[in-house]
Image (cartoon, rainbow, N blue to C red):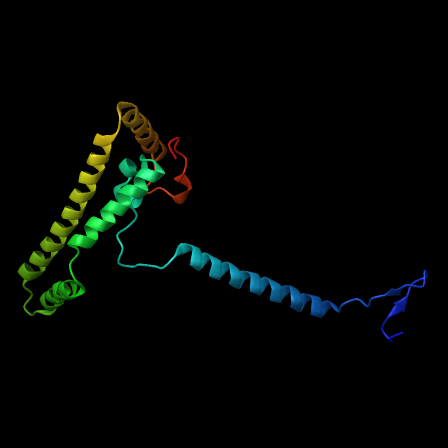
Length: 181
């Protein structure tokens, strides 16, 4: 019999108890391992990050796209991303535009004309993207049956009522609340 083993009254050898500090170390190690696994799984499930991607369709267009079914939002979002890619300026073009802005900001005396022209160009690009999104949405609504459009109107009304009193944003918790999802 080993020095730290005990014999019970029944004659069976009992295992020695693990020291408290060792149990704490093992628990902390397990917790850290689980946290790391959680981070890795979370990063993998989100997929690659694209910081140059436009915002999600339901975040960019608010209640109108929110009232679409999940499948319709995804399909419309795919078409919108494809349209954005086709008309997207190159990195060199974008950098040149910001070089104009930087030069105008540093110019002494300050001349607002080049800055105003660059901002107007950015506004035109944003309006063009908005027009693309509205056109795609109108095409989808036109393809719907009368019953589908009535359901869309009901979801839109629900979204507008639910958003009352908020600052115009809706959280992730709203996903999947529609009957059409």
